Image (cartoon, rainbow, N blue to C red; front, side, top):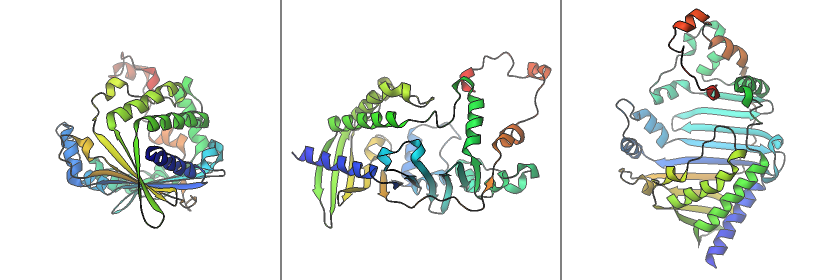
Length: 336
């Protein structure tokens, strides 16, 4: 009886999320530098490919915030109903990157200096670029820039050739999304064990426990029949690929506030197996969020000029191509 009751409470909490028109998710990686370095060492990286200390420091304190706004309840929304979207990656030292989709434009900005130091690949400064770089100087200066979604779709269609069509055409359609959600619900109902614990002030906790390998294997088995409807390039792992996944049980703690889902906490430390990990978890918080708005003063990037001019090198003639290392090689056409 408790199993059914707890599962229904969680199911209803997710349904309430779908009834909202604006929703924000905040994802925190609950870990520390030592644990991340231990995980990296366990993967046996090649000399010189070890995780930089700056990257471990940034990841241990990183937060990702995602907000979506629709004209209709999210569960009933098709692609044309979404009027705003925003994502931001933050660290204890400030925002690292942010993008927003408002109307027909994508807006973005990034702290390229910090990101370069984190990856160990410093990027040039705005002063290093020639005048014809235009709005690209603003990108490197951490200022807002924007580009047209329609222009991006045109460029994508030209580059994709036979696989053409707009970026929207290649996205996951609403019908497939609903099939996917239903399949995942069936797996969760079959493989996950629930129990509830009361709390004060309208707060209740629902814990869900399942063996990680069994759960992830069953999830992908349900997704594979939908593979033909997924966006191109999405490679799904096989059962063989997943056979070495940890069989350890993982527990997720769902916090419900007056019946609405407000937070999810997952302890992943047990999945580290041999690595000396002290703390490794994920925390996901939900809220009504604030409506994404277009930032003022964003300069527009000319994608055609950017890709066809600034980044394109001088064209090679036939003789030069014949002498190059690329001549005579069979290049996979579907990579372009």
